[in-house]
Length: 380
Image: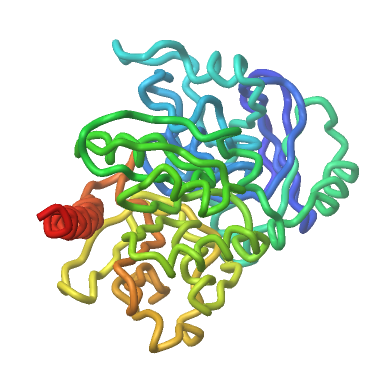
């Protein structure tokens, strides 16, 4: 698995199982560690790097040519990169894109993001698929194999790690105003394109911290509650699970994506487990079991709902992954609520699943009309 650096400063990637890969440094010179995962998307590297769901993970891109269209502010999913490190096969120092603000290397240096290039990423991906995800360390300041392997082995595991509190807003904040439905977003690390998707439909959107109580959110009088994506182990978030459980006791429509989906499942009595590898890419086939249509989806998750744990009286499966048959969506029986494991807002990726926002807002609209009708009757 060793490969000699092709140019630039030497850098090493050490895995917890003892494998060390040689390459050369890109971005900030330094050292970083985290769970090594891979993404199979052919484009969208900046959106991936800035997705809060990847907080604390080292991202490896399977597509071999990265950086060729530079970096630009409109592709940011957060204020800064969220990945702990970046691993690529071939890194483009120059870019050809009139919309770009800067090169990817300058972007990484400005945000002090450590990376390594010159790595046979596809061979390394095959290794991870066989062995499972594991921690790793990237360093351009310490090139001693044994020390790097030991640091990779001692790096904290994602199992049992709560990370949403590190990427949520500090206080309630408006994303956009509007005369449309009021959507309260429980921010566990929400992507900006999710917020843009609500904004595009005329919604008024307010973000709330991950630790917020439901009572505080309801004081804003929202028409819909949205539980966002985010990083870490959902099983390590008992307060958030209880907040979701309380939300099920209201009559407000609920919608959850990714981590939000897992929290809604846990609040309904389902079990969640850590996946052997996880789904990360923009080409995952998912079947909608209600319409029988197949959607090509964007995904980013390392945890999933255990199918045999779903209580029949609480929820049923609406979407299934066609690669490994894992649960991709739930509809909850006793509430206007549903959730999906994948990302219907894409960014990057296909837009096959954007209809889910329409379904949620349709439920929100029905509740608003019912409330308005009740008010008219009382007034009369």
